[in-house]
Length: 419
Ligand code: HGY
Ligand code: MN
Ligand code: MN
Picture 1 (spheres, rainbow, N blue to C red):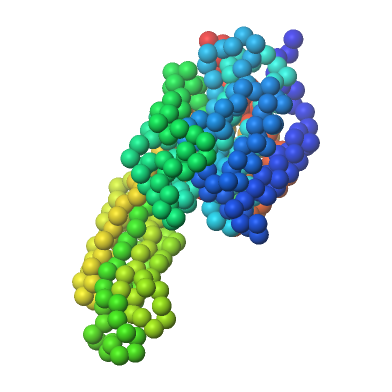
Picture 2 (tube, protein in one colour):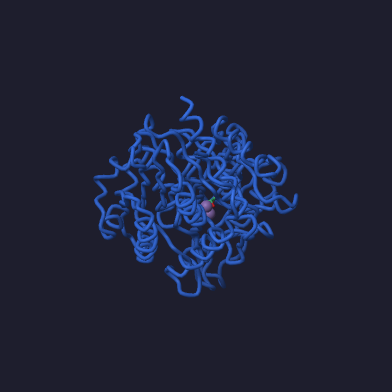
């Protein structure tokens, strides 16, 4: 009997995957926006909704101690080996409806599609709990737990309300001491596929639907604090000021200039907080964040060092101090060559160009890739828009992604059957 998945229309499945994203977008911390941070109350509703879908598919479902929702489809012959598919369910503030969550709804459609045949392995769908790093300033908490690289020192980190991470995990009904048990067995895990929107302009500019990701750029994140002297805005002459916000403004422009003059470098100061943040007070202290990314780790390191030195030189000239605290240093990482070759072959089998791309966005895949063979499939982002309510996908691209991912899984199954 032909064991392969019939290449059939997947229109209904793609429409459902999109509508599920819109439904899940209603589970938010802010009614008028899509904002869902690590283990906040709306995550319970997301878990309930996805759990129902997983159980309806006959999957065994659990929530691990890092808040990842995990469903396993285990065929009757209960093969020890498994393949992971998934993405994250948390969002940035005022997000779009597809970043992360589309990779989960598509994973569940794929389980339903492949269930029609006898599988040589189990499939585990993972809805990662925290990829953006919004609540605690540290991204990839869920995937670090799954990869077995979660640093328990993070449990002491506090959010903006002073709630330690360990308490947030307990308040969600989980036991942070059990996080080590969330880790996969790399020997039993054949690989990981993350399907995700590109979040950039390239596929749209080339009028392409999909691409296979070959690597993910390295990322440095941190806080840069300028400390000067608060003083009266009316009585303090300009030459006697140590204005932390003016220093920060000069540095932020320098960050942009540096990135503009370094090919493939992107650098962003996304957050700024002036203290005491009053109209008639010269800001004494200013906290900013830096997000800096580059495909080459040495170039990224040199850029970070140069920008820290520039902050200190600006501060010294103005009679202030500048202090950088690194919160993340994630190296650039290649995707698995064999898996990505299967993905490009699947693209070609479905009549699409085998376009490959480097990801400028970070993903849970970069954490898993350090432990198990990993690859990513990108979908076109109309308008190149993401991390914004106008983020969208095209239904025909979602359907194409299902065809390619189903074909990709067939190739994985075939490699197992042939061993
Ligand atoms: O920021 C990123 O690269 C991703 O969207 N979390
Ligand atoms: Mn994101
Ligand atoms: Mn994402």
